[in-house]
Image 1 (cartoon, rainbow, N blue to C red):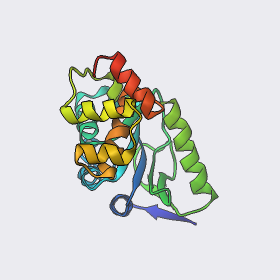
Image 2 (cartoon, rainbow, N blue to C red):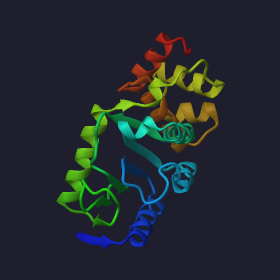
Image 3 (cartoon, helix red, strand yellow):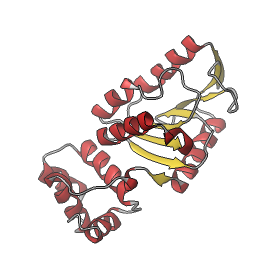
Image 4 (cartoon, rainbow, N blue to C red):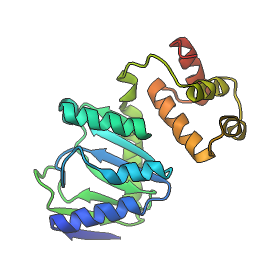
Length: 209
């Protein structure tokens, strides 16, 4: 159920393998240490392009760098759901809630060893921990000024506020249901809304509609 992975090349290979194998969802807690540049992860953009949901929880001190902030906002624009906490050093990467990687030590200053975790009570505990931290975290996109919405986002929010069904929304916008679900999740994150109806109301209050 748990395998020890050692060496930076092996760690990098396994992390890429984990991400590329995802079909539905990636959950990640982002904090140092990094294998490579903290502002370079082309695999995530590939995943987002093919409809894989990516939720990333950032350690706030790591966002103090202007380059890092710019990179995160590019990820958000591509569809990533991003949140942050004042301090979260529990680095992890989870694919489809079926396998995960965590450092052998959360206190390590460089990446030298990690645990590869298959379906087990430990994996369930890690996913539960991520979900609890996610609920406490602050959506990053909510801090970005937004002057206007494009027509599709405006129509999407209006239909959400009206309580339209998923099929009707996707058909009206001419997009797939997976794309619509990803876009709704991103808008709900920006609006800090727990339900779609609430997101529509919050958008109206902000003058987005």
